Image (cartoon, rainbow, N blue to C red):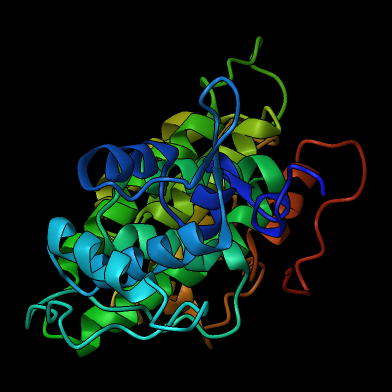
Amino acid sequence: MSGTTDGEETSLTTGALARRLGVSPTTLRSWDRRYGIGPAVRTDGRHRRWTPRDVAVLEAMCRLTSAGAPPAEAARAAKESAAPGPGSGAIPMTTPASAPRARSRAAGPLPLGDVRQECRGLARAAVRLDAPAVEEQLTAAVETHGLAVAWQEVMVPTLHAVGRKWASSEDRYVEVEHLLSWHMSTALRRCAGPPVRRGGALGPGPVVLACVPGEQHTLALEALKAGLGELRLPTRMFGAAVPVEALTAAVDRLGPAAVVLWAQSRSTASLPLARHIAGAQWGVKGARGSPLVMLGGPGWLGRAGRGMLRPTTLQGALESLAALYADGPPPDLSRGHGPA
């Protein structure tokens, strides 16, 4: 016989298990230290290896804490649920009757649907308000898939799931949405890098990023800014609810290559404002310039702006804006690119 059991052959490292469960390695070590939920196998050097039975205990722990059970009670119930019954080596996967009931206002699982596995780990971490795990999941998504895919296929679906749960749960998920949004913003700003400084006055101006008046949602603009930063293209971020007068003054002073106007809802989207910005001019007589206007966000849905771009993906927006700084034909204004 070899000295390795089947359980050891299929055991996981702490990092791999943390990614699978949507928690941070620090959380797993803390649960081991505080509640005795640790790995059955420790290799030389005290490295942890988690067996299928260990994983079953931790999955139960995650389900119970996500349902609002205090960690100490969840740990006791999780260990009981994974204990084999008399005469059986099987691990029961149901929660025992003695397990603590979820508190009436506790956060439960999010309605994610068919999404990437990373969304599920991120959602579980957010519902538990496990900030280290949320940050780790976001960082890993960007490093693994790149900014555009991480935004479109990991961050956005998870954020939308939180929003749907919030809307149907009488504001019981406000804290989850706020924590997730804050960490997404932090991750995006980390990607953006320092502002780009361009020498000389010739050449295209920067891309101006602004929410329309009354609009407070800035995350999508932050994602676009991060992507433009990766491309080393100049930007000016003005953020939420920019008054018309302030936006007009900024356009006049900067002479931007493009102005991106974000509207999350139809009540804030204003085509007259977009046309006003598109009609702005600067420069000396005979060589005046005007900005390309890009409409971003679901608020513009069904509202056509002649001569304006309305991309439907972050990647599409980046490609259109990057074309303004490349030698070659300008972007085709007759087609929408793939959502910003």
